[in-house]
Length: 218
Image (cartoon, rainbow, N blue to C red; front, side, top):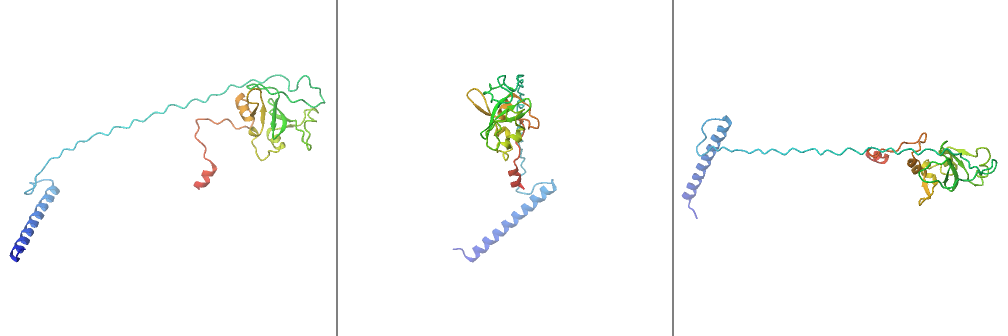
């Protein structure tokens, strides 16, 4: 244990050291604040060299150009008659046989919701051959030009008015391993231009924003 005199001497020494330390700090900050003069006692001036390393510049990666949109060549129309030579006017018209894939025949056998019909490419019209009791289009197909419909009207006539996508509602009959093909696929395959139809989408175009996402964001 320390006596009272030893404790008093220790406290006085600590106070003296604290005063010296504060004095040195005051001289130190005054020196650097003035940016000149001699450093305070007990403080050494040291030069520090900082090495600056250059950051490597990021090289922008050039993306390859998008592939060009290849326009499929249009298949020429078959210049033959729409009706076969064996057909007798006044009698029901026969449905043509399945067509060769990649060709545009004068008349193409189609079906929509189990309703038989014939697509006439030169006119972009459908002749109905259904045998529904309320229509009986096949029985009167030989009277004049038969019952001719536009694509949208024939889709509605076949009971698919709510669909409003006749390119997907109607299928055509073809030869080969795929006996039935959607009309939209066949039209794009042969390059047939349909009045009022939406052009094929560019594969390089940005994706469309759906209405669902727009409603969620709002």
